[in-house]
Amino acid sequence: MKVRVRLVSICVLALLAGAAGLHAAPPKGYAVAEIAVKNPVAYKKYLAAVTPVVTQFGGKYLVRAGRVIPLEGQAPAGRFIVIEFPSLAVAQQFEDSPQYKAIAPLRKKASRTRLFLVEGASEDPAGR
Image 1 (cartoon, helix red, strand yellow):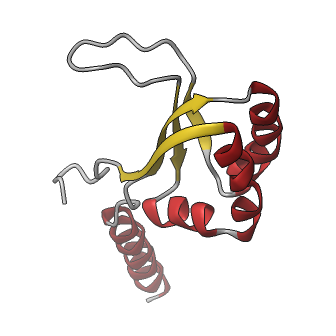
Image 2 (cartoon, rainbow, N blue to C red):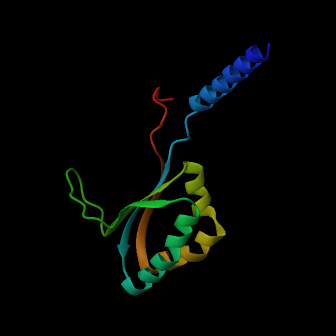
């Protein structure tokens, strides 16, 4: 009887673990920006202030002003930035946070920016 109870318990735990794996993580969220810096000194102050806030929200820079090779259409003017966040909701929380709202005026004064939040592809193999 004890062996049967243990076997059933192990099977239930295995099923629960398997079921937990069926729920894929939400797609990543991305902040994508094209930034034409007008005042490099002021923009450096913004960079110093924004990087810790990005990290606080689980963000990481994937592209930060790298070289752009235009293949079709015009290349972005200035810097091109891609920041990955755990989800689109977290990217939006970052943008809406008091911490970011306090430093965003530094960027706006130092540059001309086009900024987008984008949801990444689903990590679900079935594409759901």
